[in-house]
Length: 175
Ligand SMILES: [Mg+2]
Image (cartoon, rainbow, N blue to C red; front, side, top):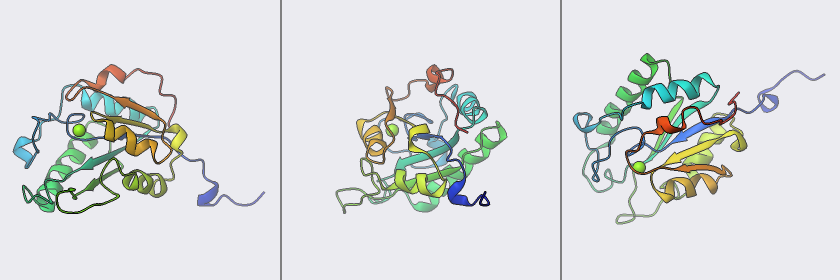
């Protein structure tokens, strides 16, 4: 029997999450700084439940406000460091956060949802099986970007709706 190599490792599942309106309250405009970043009720418990079920937790987010000059990569880094810290402290470490800084007013990018590039990157980087992955978003483009990468399980929620409604949904096992 050949030794196990990375290509032979069983591919994991992941819950892929939009950020604004799913993890944190989206006021309908950009979240420009940490002071405006408020994690929605029940989110951390839900992330922990999915993590405990063996799913990696990966955030895929459009941040076109960067292209518009509303905030900077550094502002986003502060928010994401905070999100990672809070989630880890709650027993729900976030494996990755991928964001697209582009906006069609200033240029096209395949990384901006509904483009599938960031989902494809996450699948490759984390050795994920798209059939074991779920995408949560509050816009059709969130679901479409995952579909384009072969992730057919998509759950579209209302903006700022509690994802805890799906905490006990039989997503299966991520491992
Ligand atoms: Mg959103």
